[in-house]
Image (tube, rainbow, N blue to C red; front, side, top):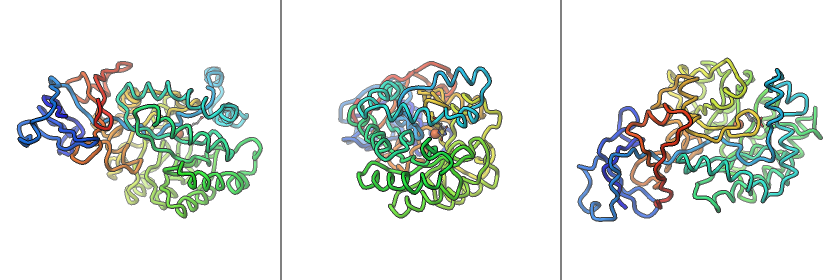
Length: 397
Ligand code: DI6
Ligand code: FE
């Protein structure tokens, strides 16, 4: 297949958006064979099924690199409580929050978890998402953590999307272990991680390092096990307070550190030194009406790559729109449209350890989004408008 008469963004070319006007992309099987200015197209690639895109924008298929899209139930009632003045942390401490979703998730079958997730997945796919990360973390017992990961894997069997899983056993302390987080780590989290790894269900290991969740010593024990198993790590850190998670994650060479509202300049420097991606999650900031923004300027200054994701979850970020996440990153955090696009393509792929996604380059997977827009800045600019024309997944329209 040959796509011609296209505007390309997200290529290897230097300059904002990696933009190439009047570009072409040749696809062979599930890979990009060639991408560049149409005038430079090698002659032998010109003779194939050609689609004239009439100037439409082509970007890499979008990558949502941080979701909790598999979960039971919803937390609309907690939303109402917050509107009446309760804080997210107060609700969590009163037995609501994450642990209430744990109860709903444990009460769901694996089939139900999958069926509940699919409409949210479909909303992301409709916006050009071709790669999706899904975390466990609402089971908090061995059986349900594994069921969540199996449901996550099955998404890719029933929908055209590439899927990466993260084991998030260290997400919250369940009720039966209240006040005994170390016992929970030893008796549930580490055995569940071993089982998830044995069954090929975990591509990475995540944790929630926070006052209402786990401290750095507890997360370090989970990361030690991940290292032993050969799994990469990532971490929710400095979302509601600074507890040192970023430096711990950097010490373990984490793929990414996520949230980061309370991260400092020194944290950004540590991330730069370790090559970690900063995953910016404006949906949670917006939903919780946080007032302290992540220090985008510090990440920029230290050259930390920034990704943007939905954090789709039933509590702090009931967001199933990657385009809205881009708009929020721009409007709330002053990220540029160029940074927002890189945040949902190249840098998001890197946050998942993928080097063949998120870029229009020969050899990368042919996962593309084709848009009815003239310029990539329009993707971050409009609110509640989906200009996707078509999506190509693994070389298939
Ligand atoms: N941080 C988040 O934003 C989500 N998990 C986490 O560790 C929130 C999950 C929830 O409220 O259900
Ligand atoms: Fe999260």
